[in-house]
Each structure stands twice: as structure tokens, then as C-alpha cells.
Amino acid sequence: MNKYITVGHMHFELIKEHRDAFDIEQFKDKYNEVLNKYDFIVGDIGYEKLRLTGFFRDDKKKTDIDKKFSAIEDYLFEYCNFGCAYFILRKLSKAEQKSLGLKDENPSAKEESIEK
Image (cartoon, rainbow, N blue to C red; front, side, top):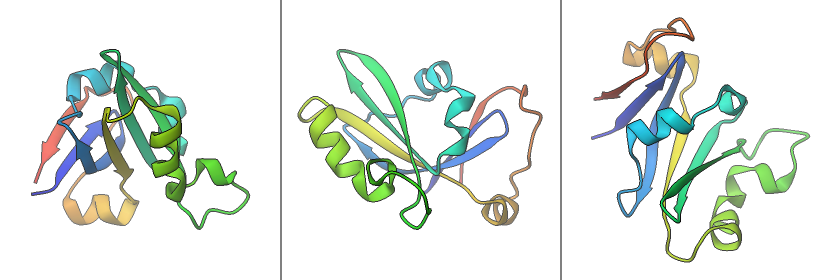
């Protein structure tokens, strides 16, 4: 079963969760619209605090290699506590949103979690 998350007008799919890291309330509290530009969001938990970091698709041009999807494993190894709980969200394309029946909502709309 896929888990889809909506925050404001952004829609994501939870593609990886290690050690039950994803908590929708914690994510909503920490999420900032600065992250809207990224294709993937990694959330890692250290000292009981959630940290969110954005990454781009590997095929995106003019992007630092450390900010690409293929660098996530290195990021987790180098910048996170060993064995920490983490999750990875993938931003859904407009076509995926349409096929799933997800609508663009007003950015100030209430956040919610959607499971399908």
C-alpha cells in the first residue's frame, strides 16, 4: 500500500521509511515552502528532532552532485547519526497527481495525509 502525503498544495509519496520515522504531525510542523523546489525530501531524526533536507532528481542539470537523489545514501552516512530513523518522500508530478485524483489546493489549505 502506497502512502501519499499532502502538505498545503504539495503532494508526496513516502518511498522509504526506516525505523518508523515518519510522523505526519512532526512533518507538517517542520515543513517549509523552501522545500517545494526539491524532488525528494529526506527527514532524519537525531536527538528526538526532525531535520528535513531536499534533493533533486539525478537527471536535473546544473545541480551540485551532493544535492542529487543518488547522494542520499552518502548524506545519511556522513551527516546523520549512525542507524538513525529516517524517511524519504518523492514529490508527485502533475500527471501522477491527476491520475490519483489529487487536486492542487490553496497553499494555505489545511494539511492532511492521504493513503491509497
